[in-house]
Image (tube, rainbow, N blue to C red):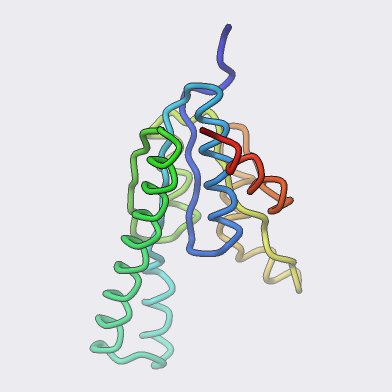
Length: 162
């Protein structure tokens, strides 16, 4: 049987929604025998904006940067453990920069067939919609995109995997 997906990329941003996306990505990768990659982007653009706006001084930026790097390691480690517990190999990758650009770049470079993302937060204003990096990336990548919802059902599917 031909598998519809050979390479799956799941975007992890530290939210509960992205970890739910990881659970479904593990489930799909296991059933399609696809290569699975977890991708976390350290948003350095946001840090630069905080420095320019004089909200952060340079030393605070460095401390915040270390915190973000630690978050990336923690969430990617958790993703590896989730996959390992279900007998699945996973590659974990950290990017730095603008999440919108980094997601598009990673999808293109890895020749990804399916991008999996967590549920997108509610749009409060048109401005928010224009600046939501994940939504912009979702609309711009040249592969299929799966937006994961229904946390309870996804957890059940993940839990049933052996």
